[in-house]
Length: 382
Image (tube, rainbow, N blue to C red):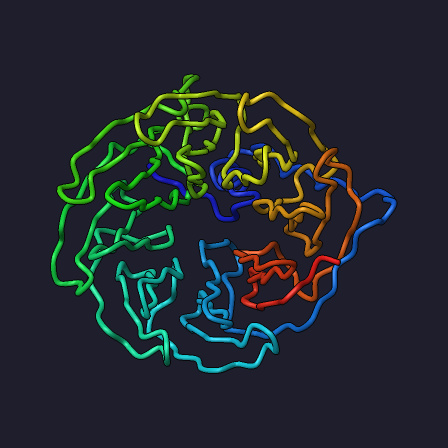
């Protein structure tokens, strides 16, 4: 049995509801009410533009891409768009015949996007015209990655495949063992020179040689515990983060772990359950737990620095970190600013759309947010 959770922020809760719908199972926890705050930071909204239609019942890894002053987006309904980053003007838009499940990746002057029917598409970045498409092993729920001569795709069947940049050749492929029950999501791999790193639903992190696909090392991030399949979920679903030769990875019902990329050695580990990617900024690692607590850890030692439980069950996104503040989005349509040193809320902004951000990209003080409803917004931290 495979169940993959709908919303990144509340995916496990949704899975619980599905599994218990016919058996009077647990009800959804109520999201925490927002309390009064002393605002010392603010945000400005410059523009908002619709780039398609979103997925009503689940969020997807549809990551906007900023390149040479243009924001590129993919919408669940099939549209791929180019938007001027300064003005919000739509430069071009094409509609694929299938719904989009993951994107956007980039290789040179090409875009990469995956569709729900199990296809990988390469498009021209100049106008969205098709270059090639290839069938994948199953639906892809991870942003396609690329390096010199290679496009890397991780699918929900536990298989990671390296294609040549013409799409005609499979360079190598690796299939992991899938547990009976998994969340609906796949960790986005990291390609770094001649090595790729990927996390899997069995709680393992692997490093691959990009030439042959040979496993260089593997490390268990989280070990299954408990008797039921639900208790034994240990998916690595958030994108991996590689900073200064160290991989930071978080798993559901598992651990937040810092791993030496060269050897796979665990440098430190903390018991944290999360299905979003950790954010690394300066000397700190920030992570959102599965219950939407926000936590900060020392990047070198892994010791806990602070914790904020004010947003429980509000379906928080990954954290956007900057010098002035941390920004996190919730599934009820609010953006929250937190003090970097203490985690105290110092600002709040009601977005012009509902639902947490599917993805975002930051450039200086600007953050481009792609909402669950396929609206793209440009926000600035003041």
